[in-house]
Image (cartoon, rainbow, N blue to C red):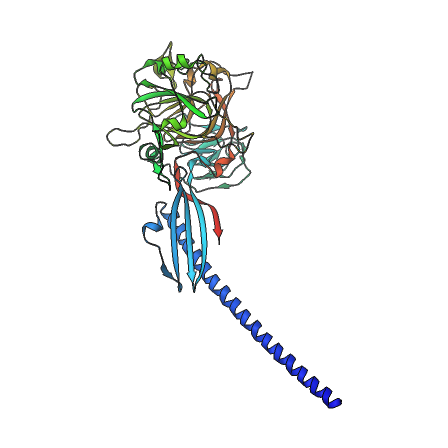
Length: 508
């Protein structure tokens, strides 16, 4: 029995060794296959990453670059092949999708990037230069959002020319500027809660209205061949418009075009009659409004049947007056260009003591005449949203206002006695936000030391900072309430900074 037992042990041991050897061989082969697969996947992944980085770099250096236009298809790269394609997925926002696919030894990996043109809408406040009246931001200034100043940012007065003059204040968003000087004259340094970065310059584009103009002239086509187009007011007109909603809850615009020499547009008290329109844009007497030349349209009705309205409204060589409640996403442009060269034309500055023009029953000061200066916007009352994003974060209402020159708080009884609220992103190439007839207004203090507020619920880009108040109690205190949706979103066809930002990066 001992010999048989020995034979059984030997046979069993041999079987175990043989089984272990086979298993080890299988494990080794599995490990090798896993290693090879991982290696090929990693090489394919690295090829895709390289293509994505090359595309991003090309876009950042030259935003108009498109790899599909230069044939980046099945290109040899690092022993494999590379494909990089781009697609415009939202022309109104300059949103682009980049797909980079790397292939190696039969393995494919893909990276999808969504980038968007960075617009001036992202700023709570952007100031390119100081206007003739200068600008001074007192100790109580509070701005909750990104701020950029293209001139030295200095605490204290007196200051050299062309400095952004402040006396303390709180900036609850990152602040960038050409240069930061230390506090002077014992004035307080501002509180930069999100940091300050010097030696940063952002150039205002010369063709600031290019996207908006293209949107109303050529438009764009989607993948189904549907033509999207904006609405162009008649050239060389002044336009008054009221935003609102119809009984079905659809966004509307009611507008009237005036000849440039029509003095009715000059009458800031009755330009948008309160007898015909409520504060939120509802027309109380459609028959009387139509008889007076007012036209009401749902936004989709602004373009021909079979076309989609893309949100662009554009006026060339005229002025726009507006108020009401915006229901939808739109951008309104009022531009003044040289008819021969197409170059933007800056409005003249009017000194405080100069009689600018006769309006109804008095001379207006520190203003411009709608008879001779164009590309201006008058805010005849509140500009609000149907759904307030400060109350309901799901709001998709958004307004952009793009002007060549001034954006005025109109001199009318409503504005001179009531807080003014203006929602949206406002852009002026040469001028900025100011109060019409600033030096000829009544006293607008609501008590011994408090002025009426002008509440900015969005953001402002000013080519040259303007005054909204005087030391004698005329005008408004500025209150900034940043719409945080503007960090990633913007009104359609809003002026771009020339840079792209990455919204998402997906690796598959």
